[in-house]
Amino acid sequence: MTGLEIALGNETIIDFERSEQSKALEMSTLHVNLGPRGYDIVMGAKFADGFGRFAASVLPGRSAFLVSDRNLFAQEHPDRLLASLQAAGFRIGSLELVPGEERKSLESLSVVYDKLADFGADRQTVVIAMGGGVVGDLAGFAAATFNRGLPWIMVPTTLLAMIDSSVGGKVGINHPAGKNLIGAFHQPRAVWIDLEYLSTLGRREFRSGLAEAVKYGMILDEDLFCWLEQNHLNIAKPSHADLEHLVHRCCQIKATIVKRDELDQTGLRAVLNYGHTFAQAFERVAGYGVLLHGEAVAMGMDCAARAAQQLGWIGSDVVQRQRMLLHLLDLPTTYAAEWPLPDLLEAMRHDKKSESGQFRLVLPRRIGHMETNVQVSESLIRQVLSSHTLRAEA
Ligand SMILES: NC(=O)c1ccc[n+]([C@@H]2O[C@H](COP(=O)([O-])OP(=O)(O)OC[C@H]3O[C@@H](n4cnc5c(N)ncnc54)[C@H](O)[C@@H]3O)[C@@H](O)[C@H]2O)c1
Ligand SMILES: [Zn+2]
Image (tube, rainbow, N blue to C red; front, side, top):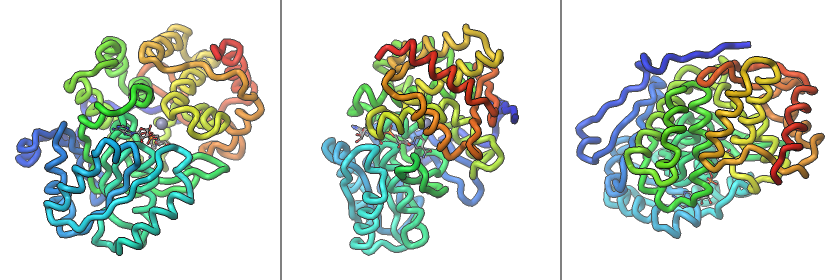
């Protein structure tokens, strides 16, 4: 078992700075220090007009191909970025995808390749992935593989994408045998976060993103966990300052972990999988697209906490505290009783993180500290899932 503790307070690998350019655009910058693959996460609000200039400063003299989905085009978010790119001298093209997790597929990937080929994309072309985690994972994977790799900029528009999926370079698609089974590591050249996009995001999607924020609190940052407890009412209708604090802190934590274990090799990055082995089984057995990712993660974290309780690692107080916070944020912690236990176990066995059929989990020792790669018995998993079903609200 690998213990993990990162002293974020003394962390120097993430620089919070305001460059002259960022001041002019009223944006803040976090640098993800991955050496030659390092990049800035810039954050602001209502600053789409500056995007073209920003992209040109990162990747001068290029053409730009923007991938987004119908919901975002309906809000005209991509149009503003495209106009700004054009004004900055980019030759532009775009693709509007049908939204939804089930589109993170080989078929959709093939459509992106076709459109990139029609556009005449070459290594001078930057791919702009504008959307939630689905567009980011799909367009990022297309960028990783088309013409042996194109540069890309992620423009996250959901809370989940802003605080999680846009940072760290994991891109990919689903396969019937498993979620995110086909993929690559391909760091973006920049992440551009305009908090204004959250004003058009549905409430359920916004709540889903908060599950990952609770995860960061649980795995590494008790202060963040407490801040979420104290601010849950504000978060339901967040101010710009609340959002900036939340997104900035979460990106800082994610970038810190990614810096330490960019390619998921040392086991450190695995801490981000807290609750996810259960969650991926719930998503799979429910059918992709039925549950939002964050909803499955909320249920998965409740299961993982109860597994830790069974092992005597934490008391019921910690389980209850996490559950209470998830409920305050309007997130579910119980799952539908009709999902058969054998199917869930099978799906957990197929999780690509499980090795030779063993169950390996990330489990809490306390709020803010996890152990990764904890081998647990099938009977413990059965116990956690069965007791969960009995209490299910569905
Ligand atoms: N690569 C990673 O490291 C990583 C990490 C976590 C999650 N993920 C992946 O992310 C995906 C989930 O991402 P998600 O929760 O962002 O869901 P999503 O991408 O499906 O977006 C949710 C919905 O919101 C709509 N939408 C997005 N932004 C909007 C806006 N500003 N206004 C109005 N509507 C908007 C989308 O069209 C979609 O219908 C999953 O596939 C998951 O596997 C990847
Ligand atoms: Zn997740």
